[in-house]
Image 1: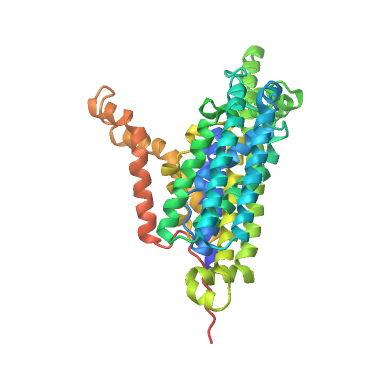
Image 2: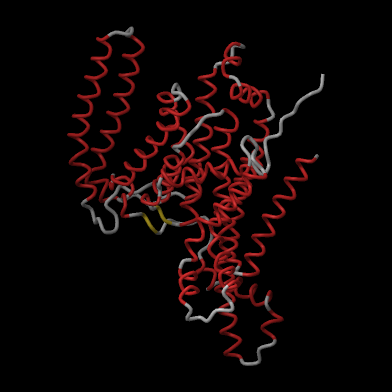
Length: 458
């Protein structure tokens, strides 16, 4: 009961803070913060079920986020027919050869016993396959990237609604996580963290440099959103009438027709931005609620108790006949898939794909801070951590500027110290975020909403 009260109180405070931003700044900013908080919540759910449920340290979060973003491009962008004619066949043949090579290597590993001969055969298959694939794909890639590189220069996608990419992004991340898990999950915790971080760097590097895939650092813009565009709403009669009716009291006070029309036009512009962000917030909130329900049911199911038993004592769980390696692989895939969904949601929200913005060395640890601050092993805590850290990150600069103006109000505008502090307000973000996190971790070392441990009395 006490924990339920804490959850309600913590989320109520968070909602009030977002409402305060809407009242004091603007509702557009408040809803922008809310949408990114919801996307961060999906990422923290994925990270939490890996670390909080199973004790797996995955520092490759940005790699799976990038795969989700790539899925948004490959699903939503229409196919570039000229590029497919120029080199599509070569890339399809290369993909078939890669799949065939993997199957042959897997067959060799199963058929032959451990010996040097098996290693030589696998090495030969890899080297010969690489040479053949490079010989076929090299000219194909050059031809594809030469097709109107200022606008396209890549194969494009399927031309489907971008919302389907949320599922595809999860599948992409799950597939790569399966391969990574097979290779890296046997490593010790610290080595696993390093390996997953480096693999994320490799994934992001491939996406950034393979222009034929998603334009690389040239970026992909103009991705179609699953909600109306502001321009379309501003020209819609039903929306204009709705805004006019909502603000009828304010508009009735204006006697001049031209001034009334100008005010109405501005209200329609502002309302269109709020409406679009509300629609996106509804979609993102739906995903968060579905994931929360599923993860909560999983956490308190026999499977969830088994995962926590493995997390707390792998040796004892293994002695009880539990397949630790198999369960670790499963939880690694599930967590990565959820992060992939968040990556597709982020690109959907932004409407563009920018591979250069995925920085594993920086943003991965921000997600981990969210999980730790919110409460490891608690889904409600992990989601709240996403809200708190992202809110602090965005609002730290405005808060710093408020305090600077408050404490320097007695100084003249031309004062050198005041001018310097105002110009440096953006950099106070790191100071305020650091102070906020220190306070939280000092007084709530297990997170704002810590994991609930049921201890039955005998």
